[in-house]
Length: 451
Image (cartoon, rainbow, N blue to C red; front, side, top):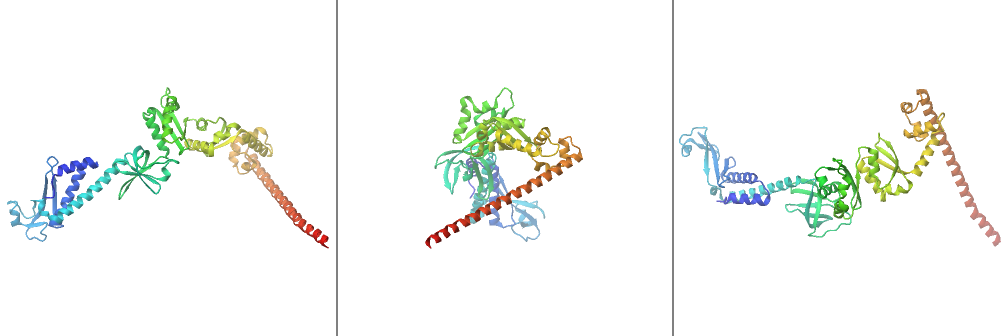
């Protein structure tokens, strides 16, 4: 009999592979049915009953009672039916108990192959179901091997891949090293679940804070946003549900021990923890810390903001390679343009001077137009009449005249620039001609001396 100690095997495989017993039992039934049909015939109606308490397996072959048998694997005569049920009638279906030893060696081998195949499928499904629940979480593993720049990580039940783009810069591992990473995705493929890890994703930083800061794990402190330049710098915006809890202080920890643990895990990546605020201007000022902000100009329609800082804080606000302002843009969701007060004052003067070329536009009117986003005659020439009316006290005729005058001034300025270019071009050509003449004069002098 090819089915022995079934209950023990099912319990052992279920325990070692993490597969539900019901899945293994169904696999066993499918294998027995396959083996029975190999032995009896493809039309055979087979039922398998498994006793989960004792591990006993019973196999029944159902045949229909007919007057004349056409298919021996699914039909039998009334006379043959009387051997199993003396009271049977034409049309009855009789379940005949069969011994699995009758299946033969080929059928048994077929059943074994089905069981192995189904168990592999069940194991793959179990691995996928287990790790799909860990997607978005931090997981620990051991470096198994290296494959074309990727790190293959042993997670115990499965292997995962840390691709080159998901690895921290200047981070080196060797086989056997322990590694922590963020489960980026779990893909269900024919060969099994493919688990993708990341150490560069912003959510890895978020999950590390949940691990290190109890207030974050408990939901008292909320991480509103996170952005990273992996290995170099990161920003996280935090807020508190409890007015008595300082979210920044909670994340930093006593003597900075909490954030320092995260910094060490990220190989020295500098982390700025900033206070989130529903007031976007205040939030932006916090996000650009440690730079001190002088003023901000908000363009809500385009979700952009011009940030003016003291001259000495310009480089701090922008950061090395633009990292500070770039990360601030990411966590606030706004486009930020950082300008020094000196540059802003120069732009302001240029804007006022340009606007005051228009008839009837004095300093106060220029200020109103400039603060409304019209920083030059060019902006006025492209404006809508309704917009000009809405921000000034001009009527429709005056607004239209202002726009038309702006177009005339702009056209005149363009013509003047073209004339300047032509003059510069002529001067350059004249200089080239003078330079071409000089060598000839020298040559004539030399020839005269030779004579």
